[in-house]
Amino acid sequence: MKKILLSFLALIIPFMVGYGANYTIYPIPQKQVACNCTASFSESVNIVTGPSIDEATIQRAKEVLESHGLITTQSVKALKGVSNLTIGVNESSDVADRIADRMKLDRSVFSLSKYDRHILCLNADKAGVAQVLILGEDTNAAFCGLASLEQILDCGTTELGCVTIYDYADIRDRGIIEGYYGVPYSAEVTMDLFRFMARYKMNTYMYGAKSDPYHSRYWSDPYPTEITEDQKNIGFLSQDMLRMITEVSHATKVNFIWAIHPGVAFTDMAETDVNSRIMDKFESMYELGVRQFGVFVDDVGVPYDEPSLKLCADRLTDLQNRIDTRWNVPGAYPADTVKALHYVPQLYAYSWTTRENARRFFNSLSTTPEKINIYITGRAVWTVPNNEDLNVVKDFLGRSTGWWWNYPCNDNDMTKIFPMDIYSNFRDERHIDKLARLEPLNDEKTLIINPMQQGEISKITLFSVADYSWNSRAFNNEQSWSASLAAVVGKQNEKALRTVAPFLRYFDADAIKLDIRYYKESVERGDPRPAGLIRKLENVNQACRDLAVMKESSNESDVLFYADVRPWLMKLEAMSREAVALLKGEKPDPTDYVHNADFQFNVLNGMGEDISLTTLTAEPSAEVLLPFIQWLRSQER
Image (cartoon, rainbow, N blue to C red):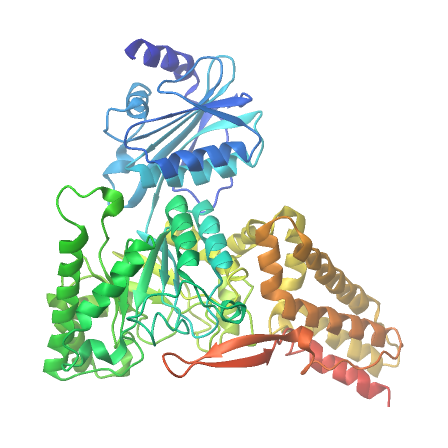
C-alpha cells in the first residue's frame, strides 16, 4: 500500500503550486487556492473510500459522477491511468488521510471551531488525468465536499483548472423548519427539497407542520396506514410516505427532525402520563426511520408561575433522559441512535413580556440538558437573526439558542409569494423590518427558516440562506439571488424566471412603475407611446408561457415548481395579455381576476381542532399592473 501511495503522489505533487482556477460555487467556499495545472476526467472514475466513509456518502459520490456522464468503479486503492476520487476522514490513517499527509496539505482548517470542515483537492497526474481528494472531519463533512465537486463538474469534465478548497460552515444546523400555518408540503415536495438541500450543503429539516393533525390534534396517535386522495391534497401523510421521506433524508444527509405538539398537556400537572404518550409516539416514528425529535409548545399560552415553569423543564429533561436510555445506550450502532431534542418553548419572542419575566422563563430552562436545542424567533416573531437578541436570551438561558427564522413564511400573507432577493423580500413582507440587514452571527449553531407554503419557490430564498449560513462574511445578497435562479429551475428556465420574478410579487412597483408613469405622461401630452411598455409586457407574457412547459417536464422538480406557482403565473399571463391588448387599442373581454379558478389555490388555517380549508386567489402584480389595467379600461369610456 505504501508503494501505491508513493507512486500516486509522485504523479501529482509536481503540479501542486501555481495558477489554476477559482470556481463559482455556492455556498461560497471559505478559501480556494489555484494550482498550476489543468485536469481532464477519464471516462471511468475510480472511487476509493476509507472505513469511516458511510454508504450514503459513497452513493452520493456515484450520483455526482454519473450525473455528469462518468462511469464509476470502486476499489481499495488508487488506480493508474484513470481518474480517482479518494474520500476519507482527517487523522483516520485511511488512504485519503495518508495522501493528504504526503501532499503536505494545510490541515489548519480542522483546528477551527467551525462545522463540516473539509478539504477538496482537484489535481492531475503527469498525463493530465484528474485526481480528486476529499478529506473531511467526518463522513458528513466529506459529503459536503461532494457538493462543491458537483458544481465544478458542471463546468465540464475536460480542461478543468486545478484547485484546492479549504471549507467549513459558520453555522452547524442549516435548513428548514416546516412550521407555518397552512397546507403541509407533500411527500414529493419534501423529498425534492432534501435533494436540493444536499446540493447546497444544508443538513437540517425540522417538521412541525401546524396543520398536520398527527403533529398537533392527534399528537399521541400513530400516523395512518392509508389516506384518501382528498387527505393527501391537504398535506396528510401516511406511514409509507413517511418511510419514503426518512429514506431520502438519510440518503441526502438532511436530518429529518419530527416534532410533536402536545400543547398545554405538556405543562398540565393533571397529565401525568404525557411523557409516556410522547415516547410511544416517538417509538412509532422511530420505526418509520426518524432519528431525531422535537417538542413544540408554542402558541398555546405562556406560563409564568414557578410550578408550571419547573414542571415544563422537568418534563423536558425527563424526556431527553428517556430517549437516551431507550436509544443511546453504550455500543449502539450510530445509525440506530437518536440525536438531542429540539424544543420550541411557549415564549419564543422575548419582547412579549417584561425583561424580568423573560429572564425567569428562560432561566427555568437552564436546568435542562445542555444538548437540547431551545429555539427563539428573536425579540419578535418576525425578527431577522441578529447578535443582540441572541446575546439577550443567552444571558437569560445560560447557553446558546437555535433561531427559528420566520422567513420567507407567508402564512400571514397567503395570497403573496416572495421570489426576490432577501432584502427585496424584507421590503415586501409587512411583518419584517424592511431596513434589517444580515450580519455574521457569533456563537450561533442553528439557523432554520420557516418557508412559504409553496416549497419549490421557497428554494430561491433557501439557496441564499444556505449561502449566508455557510459563509456569512462572503455573502452577497444580489449575487446569491441571481445564482439561485438556475439552481432552482435549471439554466434552460433561468431567463424566464428572472423575467417574471419581479411580477410574481404583490408589490410590483420596482418592475414596472416608471414604464407606466412614462406612458401615462405621453398620453397626457397627446402623444401616446406604448411601444416600450408593450415590449416589456410581451416579454413577461412569453416568460409565463415558457415556464408553463415545466408542467410537462420529465424532471420532477420542474413539475413540482410549476404546480406551486401556477396560480400566480396564470394570473400574470392573463394580466400581461390583457394589458398588451388594451395598449394596442384592442377591446378584449375583461378577465375576472378574483373568482377565476385558474388563479386560486387551497389553504389551511388553524391548528389542533381548529383547522379549516379555504380557497384564496393569487395576487401577483397587484400594486401597479392590476390598477393600470383598470385605468386602461377606464380610458375606453
